[in-house]
Image (cartoon, rainbow, N blue to C red; front, side):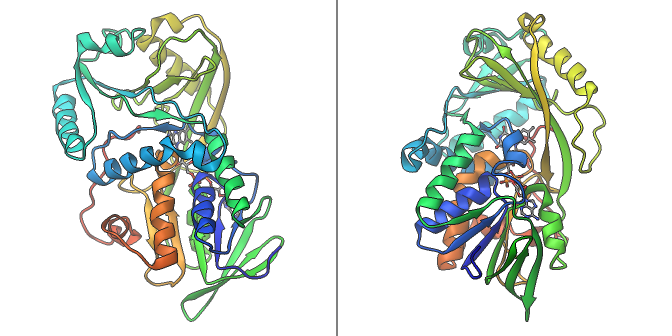
Length: 382
Ligand SMILES: Cc1cc2nc3c(=O)[nH]c(=O)nc-3n(C[C@H](O)[C@H](O)[C@H](O)COP(=O)(O)OP(=O)(O)OC[C@H]3O[C@@H](n4cnc5c(N)ncnc54)[C@H](O)[C@@H]3O)c2cc1C
């Protein structure tokens, strides 16, 4: 293991690996320390949906820029990340939701996004298998360039490309402490040795709060268990990701034919809980078959859990902690860290290499929670 480096990234999920690639590409000496294997956190558990339809301007802008990067990522990294752009159909269930959807679509269009508002009788033109009455939809919005990719392949493609550019990635290497001198980062202690550095990136997902505690910084992030399932392989039925914020459900069909989707269980409480629940299977099956009745007699293949790292406004925490030079946050992604990883790693690598800041970086600093009114992202699955 190296004893000295420019930057230590804690966490080998999609954000840690994409940032390692961006930094190594710019000639920065970078190390990733991952306590398990790459993508063993939320990344390996996720639905890997990529959507640009958000309620806040910031998330929309970030997602639009991310998709642009995703579109050429397989070529750039030299490995297929299995990006498929079948669009996202967001169900709208009542007049109040429709007013919010129209407001969002106007904002999204002002940023150049192509997104349509559909009447209830147009929903089946996009996803023919949906039971529009059963799902109680009065309409929907649809963006054809939204999609999804393979989270494992994306993470490993970033990691392999980063290694080729000189990054060192240490798996099964837990960070146990962070050392500081005069309010500046000085070293990172791991289970395999100490690495001297002046810059640490906290990309430890739902464990970022614990990493920050090592230097007496309090992050407002809260862990929430999220459950997700995959069905047996079925013949191709639809291409879009379907999502409803009212019902909390999202699902898509993978290229191999599996339906993959999730829903929050009623009355889920915060905490580091990993056990899958039967309640999820019941709730998901009932809701999914209400949306797509022809899925009633199929088999579930697998069901697993992961964490959302949720912030008070459901937007990520990015950038340097003002009180501790060299301690950079890259966490709090709530339910959308996979899709934002390409643009977030670009923004943070610009900051780390050139000190380049931006309006978005400033507005996503953790300081936003200090007493000011916050702009909550509404388009999240609860
Ligand atoms: C069920 C589910 C569905 C989701 N669906 C989507 C979706 O459709 N689209 C989307 O964009 N996002 C989705 N998300 C969210 C997305 O998975 C996360 O936001 C994203 O993967 C975060 O990536 P990350 O690299 O920041 O964190 P993680 O992938 O959690 O990586 C953090 C890593 O840090 C490591 N670590 C922690 N502590 C230490 C330590 N002390 N030392 C060393 N390493 C440490 C962990 O082992 C872990 O591998 C979903 C999440 C879940 C759970």
